[in-house]
Image 1 (tube, rainbow, N blue to C red):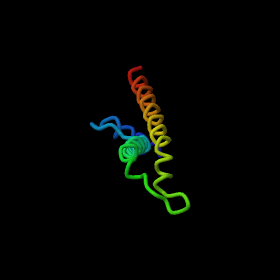
Image 2 (image 1 turned 90 degrees about the vertical axis):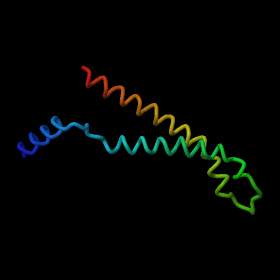
Image 3 (image 1 turned 30 degrees about the horizontal axis):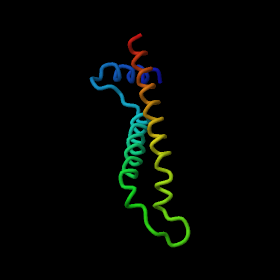
Image 4 (image 1 turned 180 degrees about the vertical axis):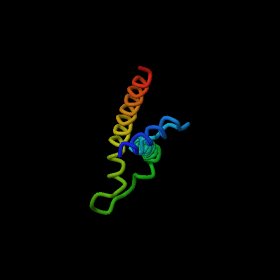
Length: 93
């Protein structure tokens, strides 16, 4: 087992491309989807308005949750930028 750890350390040190954390990449993708999707819903709000036929239409629910999606996306964006700043500071120290 120690040989495997040493080999992995040599592979990460000698590689020309940095290792990408898949969870951070997925969080970046989710951030873009939340902000972009919420903005798209606001931009197309006039297409969501229309007569309803009893019950709560899906368009109304989507439009209702759009501000929360944008807020969650902005909060995730701020968190990601903070995380990257901390990682950059650790590499420089």
